[in-house]
Amino acid sequence: MLIDKDKSSLLIIDVQEKLFSVMPKPHTFINNIVKLQKAAKILKIKNYCSEQYPNGLGKTIDKINENFFELTKKFEKVEFSVQLSKISDLTSQYIVCGIEAHVCVLQTAMNLAKNNNVYVVQDAISSRYEKDYLTALSRLDKHPNIHIVSCEMVLFEWLRTSAHPKFKTISQLIK
Image (cartoon, rainbow, N blue to C red):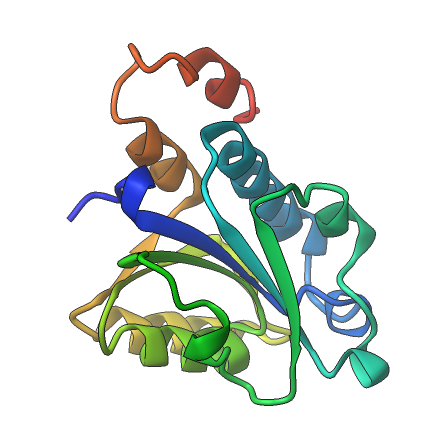
């Protein structure tokens, strides 16, 4: 099933100061999250951002905060999974990115996948340790409603065609 921009929302999970600082090669996955944010803004796609216990882990990093727009809803949480009541809307497809892959991303994706299609963006998630990242992807990939995708897949599925009026603008994000 392809991602439909009119049926999807972007969910950014816990990209916070103390978590971000211990991720390997953090700029790679952060740059992809920013591409998704910018495309969501251009295409007017609703997005959500969670913060896991910000008093202890810090706030969302500046590079993510800078790209919020009017369709962004930000909220705090203490549970590892994002509570579905915080993101309930008419969306049936969730594009999931953030950290850590094997904890908050995995638990959120599993919960969302009970009633929705979930697209976990493998190059926009991270864990401190590669084995945890790989184990999370392997486990997520086994769920019938969870799809492992890349950032570029999301962008081009949102567009569907090079004739889309925003194609040139979105394609400039990919560099």
